[in-house]
Length: 612
Image (cartoon, rainbow, N blue to C red):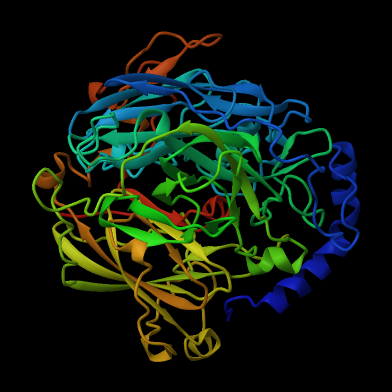
């Protein structure tokens, strides 16, 4: 029998494994220059070198417009701070870190030809080849799989983790963009290395416009546009003394082993550590993405000034939500209106975080990462429009959000942390299963389901379901220990999804005001049930078959060779294979997973199908 691991048990496990791993961990650390001076009261965590905040200006990410794009992933060097040396990195589309913002229009299909041009990986030594689907080959022939996060996309173009491209290969994605305008993003999704590829830099924004939210100065919604609309790709990181990105947070776990999550100690925005942006005295639209691998943040401005949430992952809300803080988990996006017009010229205000690190990180010395960037108010007058009264409903506006539908099917799913005889001892699990399990969810097309996400761990987990959007009903606290004692958890590999309803100890807590719209990623709080309502659309509604089979054996098309490689870019529709690997079994369906990327890689991700 196993039960969800407690914090005390985790610490005991660390104490046991620390002794076993001292020699190998220490040797690897010295060899890679990762031991550095820091707080002597926190000997179990690596710490970044001290650097001065606000030395760098916030980079404004370039954008691409049109209906056809080429995006190449490549190895590069990137300087994260003026006082640090350049660090090995990965980038998309000619950038040395992150990727350009792709701007598309709702209802107009786009084609993205992806190329894998990676020569070396910054974290090749950190690959854990014991994880599902990995081998020594992957350290040098880096697998990639580009996913449009938030896209309503046919399964063959969704960036399935098993449909990979190696260096010299690629894939032509077709995105129908049949959804409302909003903030999406694209990032790597390859099996077992998602955390390493994204952390190294493979992430970019994908903005979807429509006739209501054009992004132009004559925007019908009256929202700030142009220079007053600023995307912020937000991350947390660790750095070595010489300025290199580090994925490791503790010497307890030897290099080359999955450690469960690296909480960062510096904030990075658009690729710079603690940057500063000069703003005009007026209203700005800030489009925030939590692109971190690990942490949930509670974001606020240092002067506690009010701002307005106007949209989340599924697009605009009905009305702006006035607030002084917003909580954002990995993978989530939020669209804000911020008025700097009330501040004096020369004044500064910082974008900050006050959510402590998850429990297990705190146990070994991880601390609050409090700062992301600073805004300095200039002399010029900026956008002087007011906050719209409404964003949906009424003449000249998109339709109001529909009522939350009544569920036809109720489904319990669980988040847990089983243990095994390994280092570290825990893995992360959905339904007590591993990714290779055939025991998957199979919702029927055209059906409304209520998913009761039971988090039987002490940490928050942002849960992302591909293909669909959903509405958040609310959350209830549960007595996890009593739940586990009444429902003994079997060995990993056997489904464990008992109802937690008899063990609730709070009423249904409504969603946060900014969670009222459509979402596709939701924070499942620790020791709680998060209840969501999901509609699984039909093939006719989607314009494609969401349950179609696909895979390497059905692909084919040769594209122009990527620089330095004989490129093999595959187009799924052509039905022939030019230079592809040996035929593999066909794939089917989508995935749902925790968007803490370390958890997704081992093994908090499962397949699902939507059946007719």
